[in-house]
Amino acid sequence: MKTRIAILLVFGALACRAWGSAAGQDLYFPPAGDDWASVTPESLGWDVPALHAVFKFVESSHGKSFLILKDGKIVAERYWTPAGPAHAQYIMSSGKSITAFLVGIAQEQGRLKVDQPVSDFLGGGWTRTSRTQEQAIRIEHLLKMTSGLTPRKSYEGPPDTIWRYNTEVYQDLHPLLEKAAGTTMQGFSDRVLFRPMGMTHSKFRFHSFVMNARDMGRFGLMILAGGKWNGQPIMKDEAYFRAMLSTSQDLNLSYGYLWWLNGKDSHLTVRAARSTTAIKGPITPHAPKDLLEANGRGGQHIYVAPSLNLVVVRLGDSPGVFGWDSQLWEKLNLAMRTTSEADGTA
Image (tube, rainbow, N blue to C red; front, side):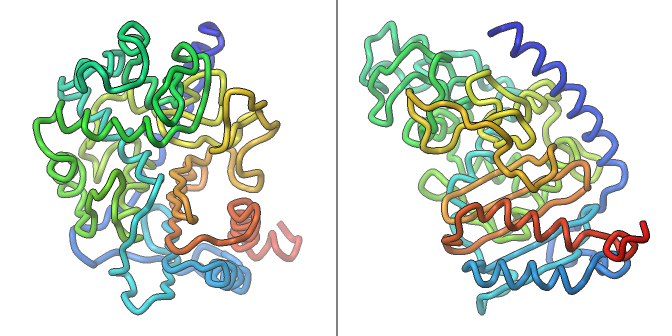
């Protein structure tokens, strides 16, 4: 197992280094405030009628906000709510990916180490296990969803032997971060993430974040740039950044540190339990293989596609469509075809 993980991390490191440095050189970063440069789909050679079909699909599947960034510039932005760009709502489990980033910042600042026991910060008795079993659970196990705990925090197995999407256990990262940082989640997020990047519509609330589409786009753009914002590092710890966006264990190849990874040979779902067998194929078949996904209940998404220098954001109510993600990317692929590709002359 350790050998396989080491190989995966090596390839992940090479991939992250390649796109993190290359993409960041050609990206636009918006200033604080409402000004944000745009580019027309026509200038990119995109299929405009096909792009309007994407908008119709998002609207018909209960979308409220939809944003596409190409090279950091807005190529498409649509709102189906009176608040328009100011519309903000809970991003649900998309916030897990933001939490993973904040854990990395805390480690970079020397406030914690991911291989530390969770009990170092939460004290004994934070689980329903024995003291020995509890002491074996480290911060990294919460990031990887391999704590070996049930949702009620009872013992299910040793850490790193079971992958279970466990929101209840994940939420303990928030009081842990507050203890490590010596401030609230809102205060820490403001200082190290929101203010440096001009994310003025973002709040931490009840184990998640309330954000608007543009702030989600800013976060995705920073991830696309390898943890930097307009040349300034938001996260300097490149090793953690690479680990966050690489396969973290060999139980679910499509999961990093609270990030979903496309293009892997198999995946487990949020409903995975101890007896679950991995499903063959990537999590989003029609999307780019290198797609990074911050996914939240009800269709809250931050998609980062390094190979396309693309960030896509969706906010709204539950789409109510099976395989919505893959259908969206199938339609996006059609929209991003150049005219020559569409008429077969490419």
